[in-house]
Structure formats: C-alpha cells, structure tokens
Image 1 (cartoon, rainbow, N blue to C red):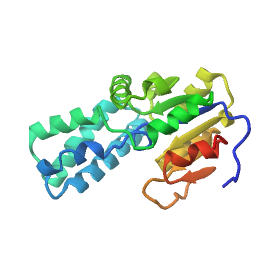
Image 2: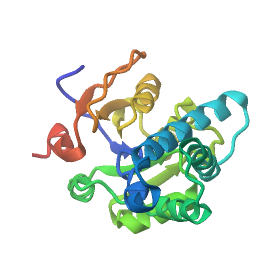
Image 3: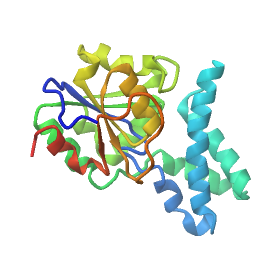
Image 4: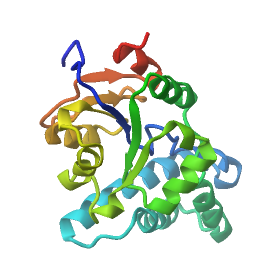
Amino acid sequence: MSDTLPSNIGACVFDAYGTLLDFNAAVNQRRDRIGPRADDLSDLWRRKQLEYTWLRSLMGRHADFWQVTTDALDFSMAAVGVTDASLRDDLLGLYRTLAPYPEVEATLQRLKGAGLRTAILSNGEPAMLTDAVDAAGLSPMLDEVFSVESVGIFKPHPSAYQMVVDAFGIDPDQVLFQSANAWDIAGAASFGFTTVWINRGGAQEECLPDMPAHTLPSLDGLPALVGLE
C-alpha cells in the first residue's frame, strides 16, 4: 500500500451501490414488514445480485442490472420465506431511490469545488442510475455517470473501466477510483486505476492480485488524501 497518491490524478471516479448509495436502505425502510429476517434478506439480496453479474458475464448471458437486481430479490425472498408480492414491488421501488451515505454530498462538493472531474462508474443500468442520482441530489456534483450497459458486460471486466479513460482522455493511473467492493477494487487496480477501498464494514482484505493503494473506512478522508485539507 502506497503512502502517497500520484500527483497527476485527473478524475475521481466512484462505484455507486455500496460506495455512494446505501444498498441496505430499501430493506431498512421496511423492516417492520419483513420481520426478523430483514438482515438475512438484505445480505442475501446483495450477494446474489453480485453473483448473478459475475455468472452472467462468464456465461455470456448479459441482462441489465435492473433485471439482475429483480432476480436476486426474487431468489432471496423465497430463500428466507418472505412471500408478500406487494412487499417485493415496494422494495424494488425503494431500490431505485437509495439514500446516499451521510458524507457523500460534502465529499463530492469538496472534490468538484477543487476542480477535479468526478464520475460514477456502475453496473447499474442508465435509467436506475438516473433515478438514484436525482433522488440523492448528486447530479450537480458529477461530470459523468458511466453505465456498463455501454459495453454490455459487468465489472470487473476491463472494458468497463476502459470507458472512463476513453471519455476523459487520460491514462488509467490518472483515475482515482473508489469502491466499497473489494472485487471491484481488484478489477480497477488490475486495469491500472489508482484505487481507494472504502471498507465501510471492516472486511478482511481479499487474496486477489492488485490490492488497493489506500483503504479508508468512509469517504470522509478522501479530500485529505488528494491534498485538499
């Protein structure tokens, strides 16, 4: 792990779900209807959502992230014994407007105000990303929102990260990439991005190639890391 960032950072790019947006927020708002297995449902929904992206990429059977998210919820509700169809629809609606983590707005404002380009690079499909970004009020703080639907395969495939360098006209190591997902950090670092793992839950570091250049518990420390404080 490096102690310093390169001096030539040209863009700060963020994963969306789990990094900027709290993917537990939908379930948290309906705990009273879900019952005692709410945490199990939230954890399984997220795990299956990710597993289905990887499996579809490997099988060459791409479907957009909204379909994957719906399929993952259907599996997870059945697995934990929740059968309320109206609750399913409610959770899916809430997922389109997930709350941002508390520090997100101030962090993006600080970076944008300092003249850094800011962007999202997400597995999310364009319409769900538009809904999420608008609901969170993040649009004024972002230069671009990149969806993997432009390349038809999910992260961590290299073509997803390539979109950023093509759009911004910079080298991979000039991109400072933040994600709460260790697998995403490994993919981005392998591509050549300078990476910051936002390890919100204190997870064990993965045994994968290309570990993060830096690790933070939240986005609060990012402005200082890039020399703004």
